[in-house]
Image (cartoon, rainbow, N blue to C red):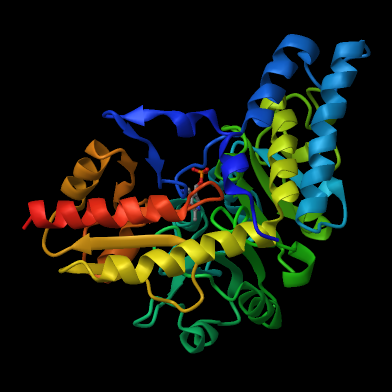
Length: 405
Ligand code: PMP
């Protein structure tokens, strides 16, 4: 199916904005995607018509709010092919989902146990593991990359020892765009009796994800990177594993019975959902999933891939421009540098031309160290980007390159 990009763009009022008098060209979709009208309308509708705390009230509003939240849980489960909605835990985002697993599953580990991460992880899939590693005396091993910035799978297989308990790897790199062979990575972890967490933050809005098909033990992502509201994230986990894990935070909602002598925790998913969740955001999140489903995730992926294939050779024609991340299997994320110039200067000049790109280390400093650079300029694409915007990016980057000499 070919997408009608113009009518899709009409659902995103922000795309009509001007920046420095130029039409906004938003190419920072890896950091966060923009939000279509139905999602914002759902937030307003929650505040104006259904706002009441969830899971605790007999009154109508509370029941409505609870139903909307639970409908989203069902929609998420269905969207990622999970068996049961109870295995979907709402968090504040990918970061909190990983912290939850590291802190909770980490308690089941013993001194000397090992964790495998990859060279291309976001800080949020590194630091939570370091925190638990220090507390429990665990060792972290890292999968290296080849020249095309793909994970070295032979090296990966050699990292396993009888002590390896967890593999935590990103599905898609937020810097390089590399799409990792997660099914193979998970299967290898399982062969060694380890569990696997996949950071799906950069995959979920760009390609079909089926947690059962890849056999992920944990799969995590953020609503705000998939056209949904901020402040909402998902942790999917396999029931048997989640059942074994201790709670992450204590408080209301996550208990069955509390006394000063003993507390009995609630079942899944509530055991991991202490306190009032962002029920407004969660309710509206269902509209983001509906938006993606209506367009079709395959069609979205194909559109973004076409933009990537169109713009990459054109950018490479610019003298001195180098792209970091040339995996044949990559998503529409382009990290680049122009000669010796600082990414910040490029980003600032592009901004003056109305083009929003991100500059810096992209929360992946270990990856920057491996690449021998301090940062890149990153253009990342989403459903609403157009060939015309790609042409504008190329023209503006060419102009910036000549200004920066
Ligand atoms: N992992 C990856 C691969 C990411 O790109 C990001 C966001 N840049 C995160 C994790 C963290 O997501 P959040 O800030 O929404 O928790």
